[in-house]
Length: 184
Image (cartoon, rainbow, N blue to C red):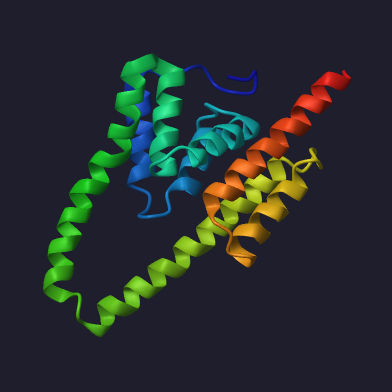
């Protein structure tokens, strides 16, 4: 952890911190995780968050769950790697089960359909806001900007398969990092 971060959290703090993230939203809690980890609790710097999230996006599984495991492991070892994702998932699982019962009974109503469309729009806005904040954390590193633009263009614009784009990006960025280190 960097010098800008707060003291290392214990298991209770990990559980409660990730519980607050898990209960903050559905399907789009990554912005809440960033706010909790970087801005509120300062367990990570913005740069550490970007680095860890990059790793978690490369791994199989939900990014935010992977992030909870990584942060938990860094802070409290194996116990933390178990407690952090448990905190993240426990509350939402109960709520989703209750909402599934309600949807089964009332999901056909126009009001319920309208509410779901509104929730989707909010989730999209949260995702864009988090992407903006992550971009601001790397603005001093202009070498990364072309990778972000090329990745977005390859996946969203050209519809190239994400695994291929990720491997090529990994090789290119690793090669540039190796080349830059060799010049020092």
